[in-house]
Length: 112
Length: 379
Image (cartoon, rainbow over all chains, first blue to last red; front, top):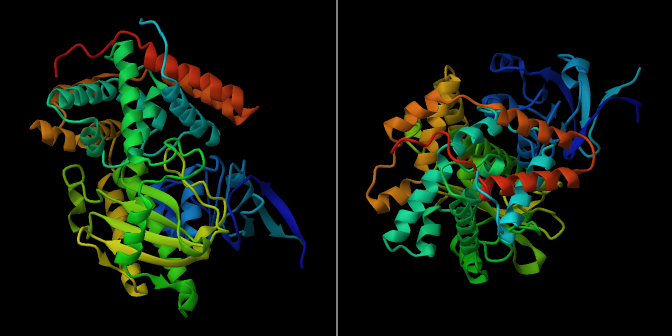
């Protein structure tokens, strides 16, 4: 197994692991870049981002807790989610390949 | 300013659930379509007053408490009123404020058969014999003997996620006003049944663009093994930390008032796409909404929740014109900032002191509201 660096530590909100390209979504106009299997990264989510949420293999938000919007939708959808990951929209870059560990509240990247 | 006398312990217990809800969200209130705290501030000016007046008139008309409770359709529509305590209950005396919240606990107790606070994460609305009838009435897809089990699990999860988002959209953030998740009900072999009931999915009076939405009601019956941890809170939030869609053993999806089953992957995917399309259509519809537009819509929606009550009274359900003008004229005051500072403490430190501080504030707002500054007109 290859080593992974911890990029972010937040709160585990929905379990499971998923690897994909990070997509930073700040507004509805950003949703066009979201492809099926991408990791949705946002300050928070809301129903205006439905089309992007339904393509996501995992969600990472900067704020919110286990009862926040992203957490609830992720559990219903059965995808990993990490919330309260401070700095997520600054540390993660569009297109960066990352792994979301929803069991431990981590966002990881292959080292080396 | 009124004075807070004795208060109901069970109302205080419900207000504690509201405090825990806020703290569990780490003090970060939902922000769509506008900050929920600000929404509650606006509602505090007219909505408890309107609920109190409507319930009083129904009693004067001779309706029983059971009959009035059933007009609210589900218990969770009632529980959300307890968040209204975040601001002083305007237009009511301390006795009326306390009585209103006490009545809401009676109404909740009419629906919830066991723990009205869902302290053990169980929202039990049906008796055992009703559950047995449901299990026999509907055809279920058995996933342990189906080759497409993973596809079924995926589309059922996606449908539920979509319906949750759709509920949130049409209720302008207050998603449980269009869903009631109940259970878990123990059934044979240690399995447990969850029922997810999505209702009032086509409120055309409020959202005319929903004309093409295919169903007003969708109910999913989902059976999981005993190892799956899932439950529901006082406010109908899922309390599972496990990824339960992958553990679905059998299910039935029933669409429409006539109860047509949708049991094939194509049919379920089609259903999901239609509700996803309705959300996207709705996003276009509200794209240019201003804060003032949302305030008007929130006013309409909250009066719409009392439509069944108004029909009994023979009244129109729509808000009076004066109230639209009133909502447009009031501006948020410093109480919103004060409340946000208080809940901001939930970001750091132990949760218990902040929960207690919130409960004390809520009790004061319910049992010792100030004189109304705004409700001076007759409507």
